[in-house]
Image 1 (cartoon, rainbow, N blue to C red):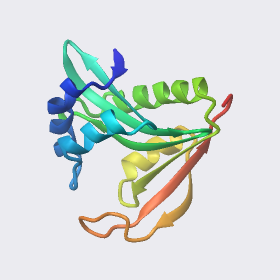
Image 2: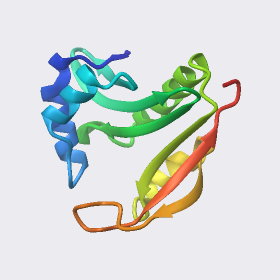
Image 3: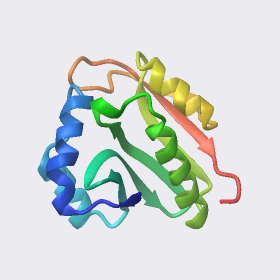
Image 4: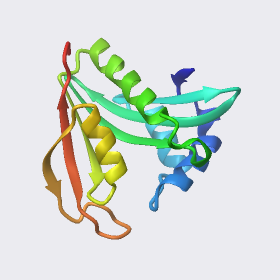
Length: 147
């Protein structure tokens, strides 16, 4: 089941965040997103009260920015990212989004391939984007059909 992220989810979300990223968001970062950012939508994929994955976007008029997506280590390579990306497509269509963008490490080939499979293309490079190692990021964009 996919549902909106709640504050009570954040301990599990942060556990996944810490597994997935070298420069993870803090619990406070997620709290700000959930409580104070009117453009933020965050969702969790839950089974038997266990959060297995999550995704977040900023929805600003006809544009959406994927802010994060992660899968719990024990459940990777099971297609959960694809389930979340398909869900996000539906959310974007329902909200009349015309374009979705994201940044991804240039070295994250697995994620880049996932995004390509959903119609994203590289539109540019953000130099020195990541704070932890100064790695560049691809700016990837996709047009939403039906948006």
